[in-house]
Amino acid sequence: MSSLIGSVALNFSEEQSMLLDVARAFVRDKSPIDQVRAQLETPSGYDQGVWDEMVALGWTGIALPETVGGSALGFSAVIPVVEALGHGLLGTPLVDTTLAGQLLLRAGGAAQEATLSAIAAGEVATVALLDGGDWGADNTGVSLDDQGVLQGTKSFVGSAQVASYFVVVGHQNGSPILAVASRSAMSDDAFTANTLIDLTKRSCRVDFSGVRPEQVISGEQVASALRDYRLMGALLAAVEATGTGARCLEVIVDYLKTRKQFGKLIGSYQALKHPTVDIYCAVEDSRSFCYHAASIIDESALSTDAETACRMAKTSAGDMLVFAGDRAVQFHGGIGFTWDCDSTLFIRRAQWTQQVFGDAIHHRKRLAGLLLD
Image 1 (spheres, rainbow, N blue to C red):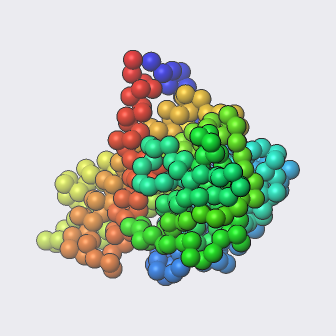
Image 2: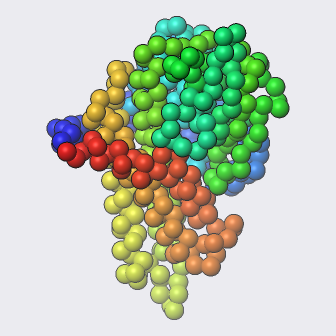
Image 3: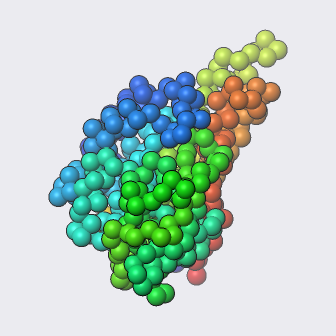
């Protein structure tokens, strides 16, 4: 069996604590619910001024080396920031940009200094992975021909509308590659916006045919980097969901403490108390899984324990938010199903979280092989 029991690290550093405090205050000031709603139907889904302030705080370079303008605090330092963003339902390209930087760093290292420096300075980057909708597939359908030109299309490319750099997962002569493409080399016709259930998110179907990438990364390290990217992506999705789950719980509790029915606060009924406590426990479980995973991820290839922790975090957080969102709608009664109620934002985020980087079934299937003989 996997030695998960032998890996119970759960660290919360002083840097993480400071970042959590700063991020919570920032999101509280910049992302009240009326501002979240104001951005739901805008092209980018976020306010450029807020993004510029996030860049000025150094969040795009938290996990990048100092040699490229980053803070070199490590991937674990990203966790409290993303948790705060999830709590505020603040839709920005930070997660996509962070993951693109980590993929380039792990696959290309110092050779990617120019692109990593641009990311640390605030340029939006994203990874074009999916050929369709299957997170478990190889997703190397885009090819690089003998003339050094890409051929093929990628689906659900996050933050594609605003990205300056695309890390395209593909193949050359049957071997996996990463091709770094610049937005300046692409036409507007290459982008087809997706309609997503979570309106705080943005993605596109992108046709890379005819695009000549600025750099191509190949070799044995590509497969390892892609494996780490998928796992770290699942972890950040879990972290964001944990923050959103905590916000959902706050909304539920506030409603239970103010709404009266038959002359009594509805929070006095056990039928509502017990599920609310279940949500609280699930949020705390998810947070523990997330920070445990963050505690054992370092600059090297992710270990089996780290893989197990990431998959458990994603499974736990996804299930938690689906339950919390559903209860938020039910507890609010008829208004809970309407656009005027914030419950709809939580249940939409829950459905998005379940699918991105693989749903609970996807990860449980792989956990079985890691944990069972």
